[in-house]
Structure formats: C-alpha cells, structure tokens
Image (cartoon, rainbow, N blue to C red; front, side):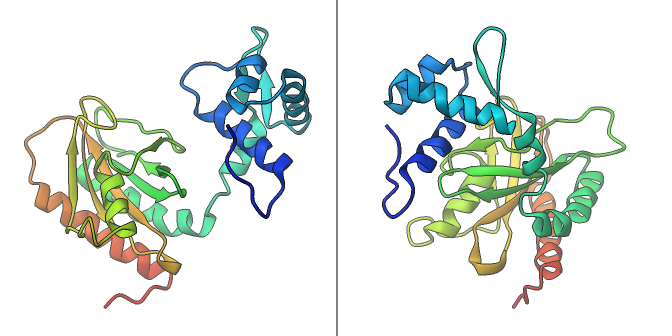
Length: 222
C-alpha cells in the first residue's frame, strides 16, 4: 500500500513509491510484482514504468525485471553537494590515517543512508560500502548515532557508538555524531574487518574530522 499523500499529489506519491520499491527491493521486480506491492492495477503500473523509462529513471531488462536507470545515478551525484564537498577531504584524511573505509551517513526520514565514502589509498585491501546503502537506525553504529540525535530522551548520546557483525556481516564499525545545519541527524563512521584496535583512538580521529566538517559548513561549535 502506498504512503499517505495528504496535501500532495497522489499520482506523484505513487510514482515515488514505485521508484523506492524498485531501488530497494532485494530481488528483481517485474511490472506485475510492482503493481501488487503498490496495490494498483497492472495497467497503471505499466504506465508508470513507461513514463520512468522515457525519462531514464527506470530500465526494463530483457527478462522483464526492473532496474533504476542511469539518469537517477546522475542525479544522485548531486545530492547534498555542499555537505559532500565539505566532508570529502576529511573523510579521505580519516580513511588514510586509519586505513579504513570512512562513511558519511545521513537520515532520510526513515533510515540511515550512506551518502558518500572514502577508501584508504595505501591499504593492501579495502572494504567497500556503496553510497545509497540504507539500514535501520536501530542497527549499526552510524544508525544508533543518528537515533540518539532523533530521540535523545530515550537514547542518550554517547561519545561514539560501535557495532560488530550487524549491518555488514563480519565487519566492525565505529561512528560519531556530525553536526549539520538545521540540526539534521548525521554521523561519520569507519568500517573494518575484525581487529583488536583502540576504539577510543578511532573515535577521537572521527570526532576531530566531524568538528572540521561542521566548521566547513559554517557551524560554530561550543
């Protein structure tokens, strides 16, 4: 069933819901399966998909399965450009210093979303995390950091959060809060294979980078 679109366009809301389902499905979706999940007639789902195809937002494979199109990838590169630009050099510095993959994670209203990443240049092997990856805010270090910003009364903020074998099986993560304009919830984090490391040191490196990113965005820290 589609989400409520009170005060907005039902057609646009249904289209956005369709794109979300196609993009987040863990298994390929056909037009028929999309129609079933949206709770609409198959002919209406075909019209939605046809419109998406015309604008390059969806591609229909020879098998009939639906995939997000290249046009969305081009748009995604421009998401929160000022934030990504401010964070990029500091994520890269964290990644190189700790020899770990560094992440910028934001809240999209429902889940924690990896907005951008940096991988160490001098490491023999790295752990990749795809931008756009989403996970619940109850899981993983970045998610719990964001959760504490959204609901501090029930989840008091900590200097840092750590997680093990949660969002990505076999990996560890450490995350700290990132202050953004208008108080938008965010975190920066690192992910790495299981190793005996000083979590407090990693958290301090992240906290320093977080302060520098906030300062680059014009936020005055206390």
